[in-house]
Image 1 (tube, one colour):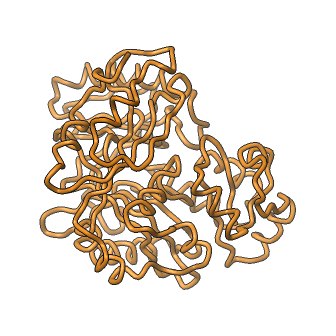
Image 2 (cartoon, rainbow, N blue to C red):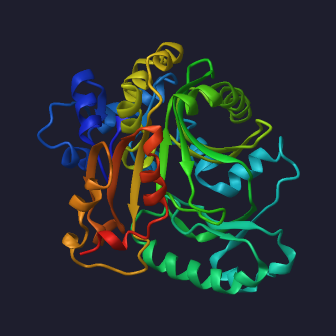
Length: 388
């Protein structure tokens, strides 16, 4: 069963719902977003009764905007509690203290920000909303003398983004300060089956321009990314599932893996894959797999077969966040044609209303190893060359 909500439903997800006749909870928002599509609607009343009676029902949502609906309608289940455990980064760190007792983190209220004694904090550290999304309001402080300017940047960013998503998705009233986790960063789409066993559906790597970068510009995957990290990620997910007692539950996990192969969690996003239907479509572009179908049919990818047939190319999603330092009112301000001309094999371009969501869009592309300079270039770009 799936709970559809704003801001976005991709054509790929829509087609999957129609082809497989996956039950869609018939909320007003779902009716609006799927208008004209021959999907298999189930009434809210029947969905609530079925989920409440059947603990084996797999419920997925394309957006964390739906957390409020789950909170309001499914209190008889474990879902609200599991969602809050993962959505609130402070509660998540409290859970992980059982296995990482020396990890530093500290929760504070936004109105306590100016009272923080930076001398008492480990350097470097990360500060971000305790309930966050899409790296919005995330800052890395590498030197204590940067703290004053970081606070002002954080306050400005919060003022800009606090009204974009509901408080269940992005709540800026509470912040978390935590130590920096070393290693390469990866994101994983997976679910836990009825026995509590993790099923890995997809792995992608998050690239950064510099050590101080905390943005979301590029996620990529390849045969090597999956093959190298599959056994490490599986062992970590087994530990996480046991710790949180997860069954019939999909998640999108962000971790860092250090040179010794230690997997250290950053955060867990409940009941969804990558936001804005991004990672599921990257998996389709890269490996021709449908992670939604695997989830709802409770199957798993045959990674040995998939990787044996995959070439050495890199498949990426480029998030066109505004790093120009300027605000733009006109939607035609971005030169998408110039952007597409800068990549050897664009696969899909999604334009986004910048005025509403503060990003220009998403680009999927495929790159040969010898041409990966195109990815380096866009990773370091402030996008000013594409502004009209």
